[in-house]
Length: 241
Length: 134
Image (cartoon, rainbow over the protein chains, first blue to last red):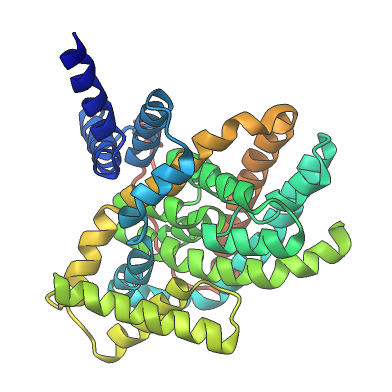
């Protein structure tokens, strides 16, 4: 009997090790890819969402704190930097499509940044959220590191800014292509641009799967939008708060 | 593969360095992306380059790389509490408004400036009604 308990302890110890947490993360992602194939690419079957649900259940059951999980999977998160650099590759392949689109692109991203900041703050205020929440929501269209840094300087809650940015990204990965079609926005560059500008890399990851032109412009829009939001959040803050 | 990954990390490093030195308000990898884009244009790199191969492999699994940060959402959902409704409405509403404004501004300016469009062939979810003469 005590041998069984020992074996159980050993199993639990292995299950809570960094290796197992990496395994659960990769396994959840593979399950997500499998579901995506099985459902014929259904919008809700985004591998990132499936993996988050699987890992969320696993760390709750195993009683692992999020910071411990985060440390264990640093190996995966690390590659986000080089992957962001790699977004230059689809853009390079699609560079000829930049012609005649530079002015519309820059204007649209700048206008989009202002609208996104102001609408998030006003909607939250209208419904009675606290001011620290308003300040945190202002940056949610930016890629996570930018959202965190901007929220810090604005006096919001940085950890929550990352959460809002990721929720925005996942929602966009699920809903954006269909929404753009309903809105009759059919220009591939404009579609990619809109998604990248409002939902950074997670939105871009969906567009890359849909079409290389859309993906390339989503990646570029993520970068431009990070720049626009960094410059415009302090300006908008002057009249918003 | 390793050569390509080394190249990507080198561009990220230069990006991080420029961000620190010039005090730029964007993350290092975003600057690295623009530098790599310039490099690929100047060298007119094709698909056989090691950076292109390694980078394309990473991008195929871009969603995996967001999972560690994404699990943070699960950890924080509980603390939203009373503010959950305004937060959800603000996130969804502002996302939709942003998407519409960016999309329509870009398409509208294209039309205004008389630039050629680059439309998707045919949207599978919006088929033309059968029998309509065009």
